[in-house]
Length: 397
Ligand code: PMP
Image 1: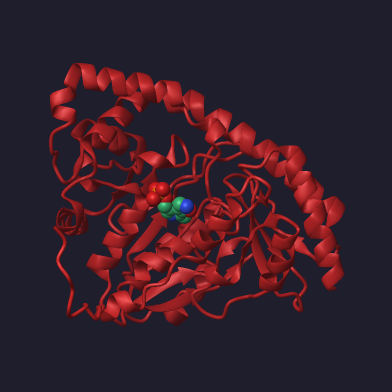
Image 2: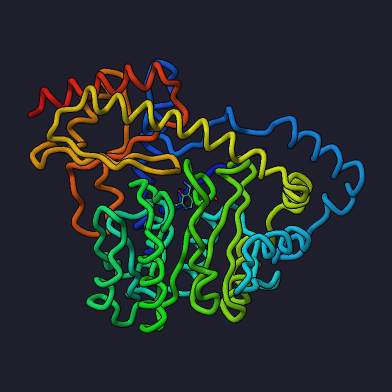
């Protein structure tokens, strides 16, 4: 039986909660899930790549053979055989990663939150790229840091610009491979320079790398964590190489930090689902990703090329864009006078969606930029959508 509320609660949110805002992308995604819209807005991997049958077989095997363990609570740091597999895959000839350095997380998004929780006080300086991953800005924002932007150019983050903003920085958050949102990657030389600069300044360097294995050509670049395991915190994810719905990621950090992260995770959710971790271990342990990832690369590479070709054909010459060599995104720079937000209003009316670039900047947003994703849209729809965008942009010149 329900009671009356004679004295309705006047919700008083914490200062932290009062300043929370929904991610602009999540808001756009609500609109763009309609089937009549050509959406270049999503950051979603293509469901065509999800290994449904392989996952189904693995769930069946794990539940049949070890159901009682899989359905029980598990350790906070994660399922030991999977942590071992990850540590092995991150180890190189010159640098060994220990399983104890790996903390399994509920998506790598949780690792961002935990890093904010253990490294950032109100007003702490956090260094980010210009632009940076919106989800990281959102995760760190909860802890109310002072964001300082590090310069980037067409080759990505510029390490020589770090010194000027380094004072007191608690961390530098970097995305070296096929960056979200720009699709840019750091050269080997810049990686080395970045690792050396952060080591010299004693700033923890975060290497967020969900897209590293999705390179269209050639071998993936060396990881920065292998160059300095004592100073680099590596974040990985199964979202882009298996499926995002399982919410499984991990962070690899020096031991003193990983223990703190583990305590923070314990307080947050005890542990990541044991069943999921056991299933993913079952799927990856015998080399499945070695055959699966090339199929994702091929699909994304073909669709990326299709979009680049269409842009060349339909976009005015005053528009420029990145030409990614992997990952899921192309970054577009419009002529200075065009506001991507205004373009979005018109393009939504014409049933084409994208994400304006401004929300990806921690400081001084460039309103003439936007992000396009090509992975979930078939080629004929990519051509159709880009032709529409090209016309709208031309009309705004
Ligand atoms: N980092 C980056 C750069 C991302 O693009 C994403 C997902 N869009 C994440 C982290 C979070 O991924 P997940 O939580 O699915 O592992």
